[in-house]
Image 1 (cartoon, rainbow, N blue to C red):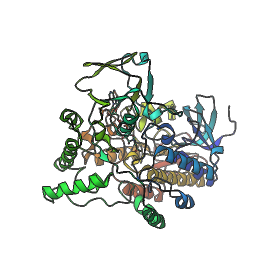
Image 2 (image 1 turned 45 degrees about the vertical axis):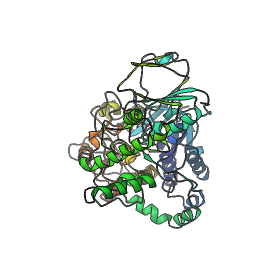
Image 3 (image 1 turned 120 degrees about the vertical axis):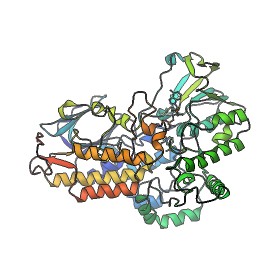
Image 4 (image 1 turned 135 degrees about the horizontal axis):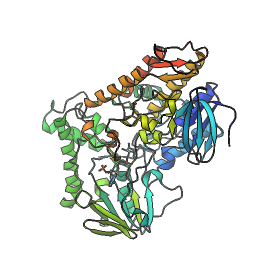
Length: 550
Ligand code: N01
């Protein structure tokens, strides 16, 4: 399966990002081929099929803006779309744009090597494909490499072992099963209430209690949908220039500008309304000031007391280790309520850690739990994991893993010095996971498409971010994060969930709108921070002392 004719570009991944990138490049007249390890399109929504999987972005914002017909035709059924709906949406996009013919499915990229003399990449897959291309664009998602803890004895378990991020395509029947869920992040919090309704017994193994806010999911009113669709262009415009890719106005009031009673009323109203506006829509300083943050955290803890009948269980569920919002705030449907069910047990792993997994279940320091199914809801090696797994080798054969040993260094989260002609959609150092993903993905795809067209127009064989630009951007990403409470949490944003991973704040928290302006300015200044080389490029932007092979 060796492709002799070099391509202009390869795109890795067939989720929101990969589908749009392939379409965009094809429309721009580039020869492009997509590679996807799954057997179909969908990306995140292909792999995360666990019970209760649903998007925490409201459906009105969770779609492409560049398909106005589909935007009008697609039914906006419930407030938060479920995994099957989103997968159907992406399948429809792929059909309408005739994209499947441009992808190779079931193809896991294991090596990407840059040939400095030719200025091209060679891509290889585990299934034996090999192609060369001028450009590589990664569209591998930020949360696609599962974090699978290795407990002693794990392989001896005789029952079924599952991971939320890699759920089987065929239905899993949990009825009458004794199920364990390990992990209480956004995935566990979505899955636990649904599994509890199906399973004979559910044991939740919690290491760190998490804050969660009601989603208040439900059907959308016809009139609301009609009005929304009428005004779609304006909603989209606002989302693009907002802090997080939603068209809502953040609060401008400090938590301490109001009385304690008014504060409580504001939290109560936001809790009742459901969704992320609990933080951004109530008070402006919750992400910045510890005391202000504590007022919101206290409110959620008081809600746990109201909801959970057993005071001992309520106490175990109360988060106390980190400021609210510094680990991604999950949205839930009946999460705390689930612990009132007679068939649900909560185990605090900090008090009674897992000692081993046995053929029949899990043994903690307090005793053995007999189980038929173990569900790992233990998250991902976020942002860097999916990129490092591609086996990327840039200039001098240096691996990306090695280049990022101290943490990722990127320019705008989209390019990496030493890895020319490689572009990363929603890479580390971009708003990515702190934003509504389709908004950030569209911005990156369009920016990368324009950049490649510009490079082609300038006859460049190679375009590469400079060390200086990447160092400046990486510092800026850390500085902005340092103004918030985020670095205080041992979160996956900080790489803290993966043993040995450097502690560095991975996404860019400066806001989607600001980031977009910054990227636009870089483009307007002739792709400032990049150097090009090759026939006809006039070694555009090359700095003195820059002796790179063309
Ligand atoms: O993963 P997580 P997730 N032993 O890393 C625990 C997105 N998402 O899949 O906190 C025992 O948040 C870990 O404990 P601790 C969203 O961005 C989006 O839930 O590290 N426990 C934690 O409780 C989200 O943030 C949607 O102490 C272990 C849990 O496992 C991101 O995906 C829906 C452990 C992991 O939580 C990741 O969420 C779902 C161990 N060895 C997810 N290792 C949407 O709405 C880890 N844990 C679109």
